[in-house]
Image (cartoon, rainbow, N blue to C red; front, side, top):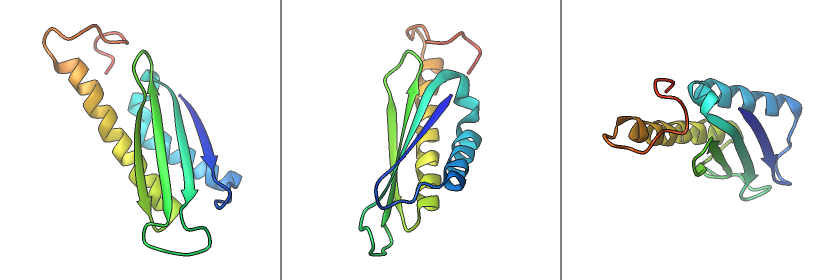
Length: 117
């Protein structure tokens, strides 16, 4: 699973912050890793220099192998909180998507071998 991190001009994209984001994504999406080709993380500061309760935004897009991409967005007071919220939402979306494919009777063939979910 490849993790790509993008920031806008108002977020300082240091290597330490990128390592933190990668660690959070890997920790929360590790059990889906073999089914995902890439996770894109987009971070932005909505109000630039102003502070507020929903100032930072994180959108995460996961690209499951053989399926349409799914995305989740979370807004919070800090970039760290926005990343945590977005990865939790994305994990829930993936769990639902893979669960529906796995549990349906007569469902189409999965894009990955049975029993690997």
